[in-house]
Length: 416
Image 1 (cartoon, rainbow, N blue to C red):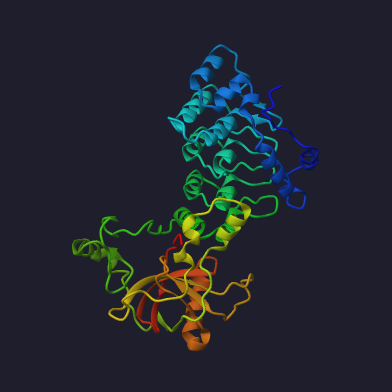
Image 2: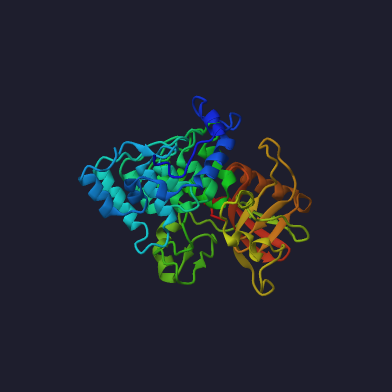
């Protein structure tokens, strides 16, 4: 009776009739597209009065129905999609984005229903639970995600595609949501129906996802977490000008007092630039590749939200050097990318791509201009960098034609 305006097509039923997880070859992508297309037709007015109250976060009506025994079985679902009531609350919250109380009304409604026995993980026809809806939409609801997880939602629940929520978050570049799922134990090694895992996939999802997942890998294995933002290494202050340690060019301090306080510990790892731990490269400015992550092009093509900054003039401008380089050398944090071949066993000797976060320095490095140093830094990137494709280093740009890069320390992964 209460179909919510949704219907399951014959083609959807044909694919859904297959046992187990549904791979691309079995029609998984077709099912995704049909599911999305039909989901647009969700009509709240075609829900039961109780479901409509849940969908709108109307706590007083929800409570009245439950206390009077007029509410349906909370273990059940509505619509031909078999949408659970926790999922309806999430879907409603994603549509009511400008309400006077925001997500709070939905969180209070969910908290009440959980206290009355509402299960958090009711599956719909494609195996999506409320957690999938909360985390794999361009309108994420992180406060409701925490609410679901705090009340027992399975962070590693697999849909009919074999996917856990983390994979969808990575595709959409939802960094705060990824942090929450990892905090609650998302497993990087659960494969989807096509064998993809988060561990295999995160490198292709762009630098922000890469930095976030790598941070959690370090944390889970007891490694040192990278600095989350540009701040003083001693006091954490980020609203003051910072200066790098003159010896190692890596540590950062807001004052001489903070530097002095940190020295007892920092001196154990402080390595000055020397001929043994650096390479000297000759920047080449006549050719230059795009620094826009491939993942952003993919998101744009698929219609997913992208950050405007990804396609800004700063990101797309040509190779160049910083201003005032003729008056003083520049200390930089560089990203170095080796040529991508698609096969880690094939090592191209094509140009290296180098740039800073702001792209105020960008160039390529040709092997012909210094084979030995080209080979040294390439080897470090391939053996110590992210996925053997990129790495971050401290560097000193002494002149337009001379770049000294400290390769003894590969810096923590950065979200750019």
